Image 1 (tube, rainbow, N blue to C red):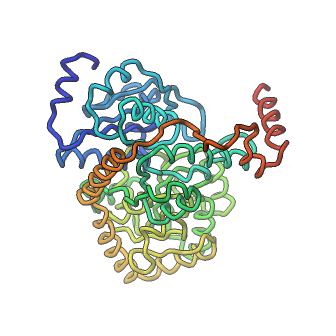
Image 2 (tube, rainbow, N blue to C red):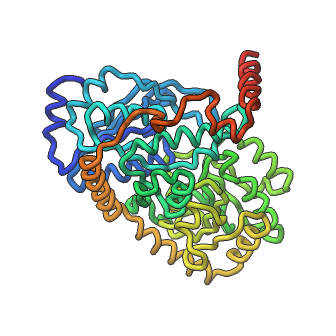
Image 3 (cartoon, helix red, strand yellow):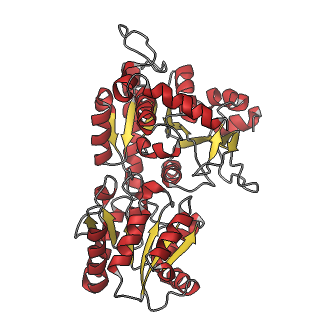
Length: 449
């Protein structure tokens, strides 16, 4: 794709704005970040803009080929970690040559490391504004790193802080996330903007035939079905959902819980279901293609979700778009889209509270119908066209702000009077003078065995 003719074709495409998006994950991987990028990109192009995606290759999908134009891939390796996502190697002479020739107006980063740093490098090199979408509560994923958790969380905060200050604007998907980010990183408070991720309503809608097919496939005729879509990982809190289901449905043998998704906790959760004596009523569907998700949601009577680490509640909105009333725990992301007694039930993150809500919604058909109608109404508020227009206005604002006050893109910049020290004071204040070193030494010792 490096030929001059190809570049000439790309750069001559019509469009009001030329946008470069850097992300550590993209198709064929399916997750909230990918869905957000893809939906925004499709609508941006429908509105006349030009979007280029810079993402890792997908070594786990040997037969996958990009069908969309303007996708540029960095080399990547696949590591045996919990998420099993590709790990980008942010080195590509081809992309180094291409990017300056695309005549970008703005660069939009989706992650603070790896290709996020590449986004910074190009913003600095081409004198362009850089913006960032804060998709994830990064500290909540500290358990994936085999190291002292306090240190990992502290280091994570410092890495994120150093990244945020190099962005003209930072997008928070919800008001809860904006408040949380502002409290953690007050230095960038004025640069924060709230913009939810859109729902593709042409993809997520109630399909009774496909829902019926799923019910037949999984032997769900004449059953009441709770459905949940998530990775089976600690931060998704699926064990609480299982315990609540067991408690709520002990007198309702015709109820089922259908878990759509896979992850490293699957065996542990299957064991828990057996211990709770609900194994025959819990269906571990596993991972499904993105195109199949609406069918599984259409097969459910209620969407149940216990995650406490969501930033935008996108999967909940997708369930709402299919007409599912929702039950979620009261946590950021969830409570930004679920409105208690209007489109769902919002309860405390406790087994008993969740179980009582499940019992109530099983028994009350009128409540289910009312909440289902409210859910579809809420989903329409998150349709792609109006939210994409807001994104374009945000891009325009960022471009103007950068022209007026260009940022220093230096990495880990310090105040002029702040002396260099090791370990840094922010680390020793939290972990103590020696704990960080002892943990580091233990980590490397174990790593070598």
